[in-house]
Image 1 (cartoon, rainbow, N blue to C red):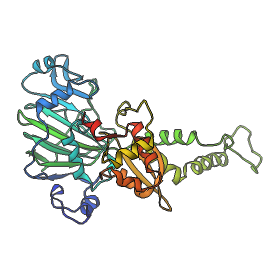
Image 2 (cartoon, rainbow, N blue to C red; image 1 turned 135 degrees about the horizontal axis):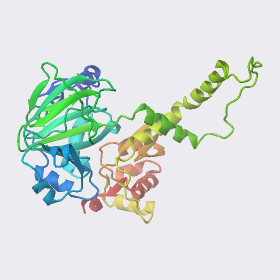
Image 3 (cartoon, rainbow, N blue to C red; image 1 turned 90 degrees about the vertical axis):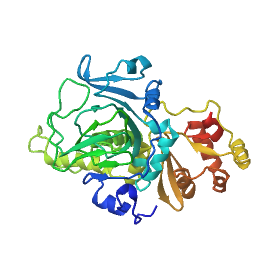
Image 4 (tube, one colour; image 1 turned 60 degrees about the horizontal axis):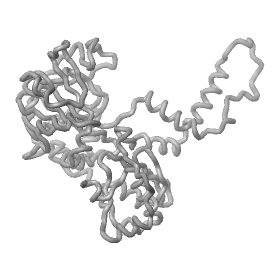
Length: 391
């Protein structure tokens, strides 16, 4: 995808213009972002997913039996839905792209953004009046109207310490003031982009309101620091410690002086300031599966020779739904391929191919060591044979 090609889904902006002027800066309403859009699933199909074990689903009732803004977690059953009122509730199902291939295909339209930044596609259904209240997300999101109509109101960027309603299982803002002009009803194919920290409130205007939310990963500073420290901790020698050779005699032996603090500061910063290790950690973090039990490893290791024979006979490997891949250049034609929280060094063209949307067929065997890497990814559950996945 050329960064200078105008895209209808970006309102005629090029990817370069969108990323430079809009991304993480301001909201953007795009009428007709997906022309003649046909929603890839129905409300009944979404409800069916919410009844399955292992799928993350929530029901939000603004006027629940146990009080306002009642939240229930799935899996649900038909009786649950039959007992719901005619309005003012919402069903939310996470990671629908993991289970519905047609939803996963939508993500290909977002190729102007790094694939490793994508989190998942959440789909919500609501009858008239259904919402989850005015709130703030700490990540970028594209809100694509799938079917029906939803009214969106924006309240501008809010402070991190904005007051939320206490005593409920939702982070609903206590105060929400709609900014002038930021009040729209979206029809199927319309899309609203919101940067992190922007207050918004979406309310269903029809009995067939389905909204697809394309969300993005953004580790917080505290999560990143703790995770990187844990990653480094397994690799640092025990001899790397605080040291103070050549220090001046203390004026007061009980004082923790600025010089001591600076020595500790330098030890920490010098240890953390390692771009190569940071890249290895970052690639693993950003490709971790959304759900820890998502990958199903093979009980019996794959013989690379058998894998070669199968590929040469015309079979193809496919990426497991929900698996995540990325690559990082190491120089001299080598790269680290990151897959589902792990990393392996290989030829850069091989890493790029596996981390792309390209077919995984016998052409991969032209790269040295491809059969061993592919067998490892197959055994880890990141890849599967086409016929196995179709089953």
